[in-house]
Length: 109
Length: 113
Image (cartoon, rainbow over all chains, first blue to last red; front, side, top):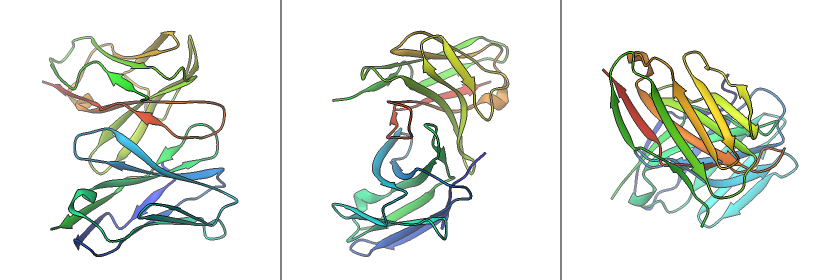
């Protein structure tokens, strides 16, 4: 069963704009992770936020977590064409994270 | 540099064939996973293993089996391939008992004719 659900399913922006993706989940979690997948490749881990954290930064990435609303957001600032990829959230209650269906991001040069 | 290696990036098999997908990790991780990825469905867990010779069913184990004889190697077996098993298969590994970072292989795209 899939716990995390990303929104929107697809996002198209211009280079330099910010991209925001959201993830909602249903049950309690220990942490939430975001992954990136370039077309036809494996997933790459971007960032992990624990349930007792509210915000985390890594380079141009900013992740927030609201456990009361059971939701998280991933913000990519000053997007680049190379950010074009699918982005997945993965919710972890045990050591088996469950993935959402992903957000497909296209950044136009 | 940590690495998860899947033996084949692309495979084409015929209905009824036995198919082996191999995955090797070099990080001494306890946990290994096989996911299947289909458009619009995201990643679905087929099987996982938390130790050598230990395995647990995921969400969609039907039609699949796995083998983990050594810590670094986790194999996915399709006993009799069917066209509805045409998909991208992703292997991953992780360390420990709490949900941490998964390291993924590059994927194996299987086409069953």
